[in-house]
Amino acid sequence: MLQSGAATPYTKAVESAHPSSPLPRTGSTLHRFANPGRFLRLTESWLPWLTGAALLVLGAGAAWALWFAPPDWQQGETVRIMYVHVPMAWLAMGGYAGLAVLSVMSLIWRHPLADLAARELSPIGAAVTALCLVTGSLWGRPMWGTWWVWDARLTSVLVLFFLWLGHAALVRAFDDPERGARMGAILALIGVINLPIVKFSVDWWNTLHQPASITRLNSPGMHVDMLYPLLVCTLGFTLAFMAVVLAATRAAVMERRVRALQMAAARRADAPQMQSAEP
Image (tube, rainbow, N blue to C red; front, side, top):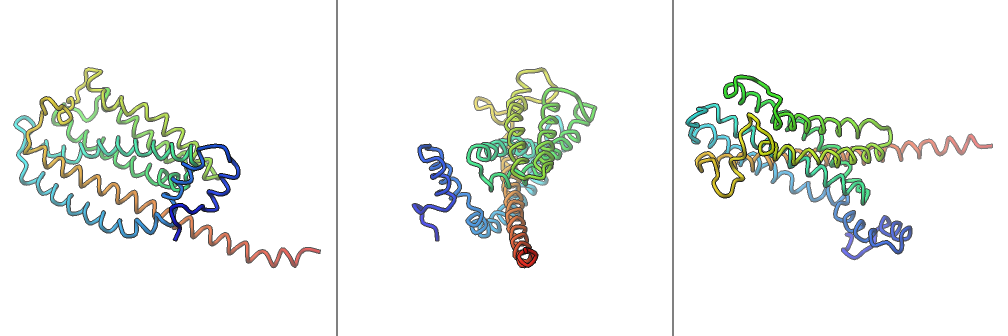
């Protein structure tokens, strides 16, 4: 087992290439904590517990939201869409913030695991954002009389959806995975500009979308009978989101390991033929 103070071959190579730079020490520490083998060992024990907790919390939250939470005095039973729509909106933004963090790790410390996690995160983030848009349209139709309006909140969330899709396509568009990861990381960091627009669009512009009713500390606009099941549903969806991302990243790490073993076996099989062909 690698001790905390032991130097890996990667660490020695980086330190020899940059002996006077303080960056390799930080980078090697992060690489030690994000070692793919250690990641697989840790998540092998974490993932079943995380999945079980997600199912348990989601089940409790769904039962609370659908059968025990009261209907809204204006929106009636339609308000129950909120228990899916709001968590999806928060996960779309929080997940993209996580993508930006992975992109920083990729650009600065050349994290191979960060590249894999970002690659697997973007399709999941796109699916969550699409679900946010769909449930928002279902909620908006009886409230606004239309499925879609080009106001600031909806348009900025649509831009966020296209950013997720753009990242997922860009990292897969190059034959060189490292180059695709670099280009995707740059796009992800540029797209961070959209996050405050999504968050504060209802305050900066006059939109049909209602303003924040949960994050107002002085006077929250939601009764606790609806707030508590919403928070439980949000926790359940967050745990499920994390479990899916971890499972996808584990699959990507194992797929890359299998591919590397296959390439090594192919090179070993070709080596005798190449030696016999030499004069």
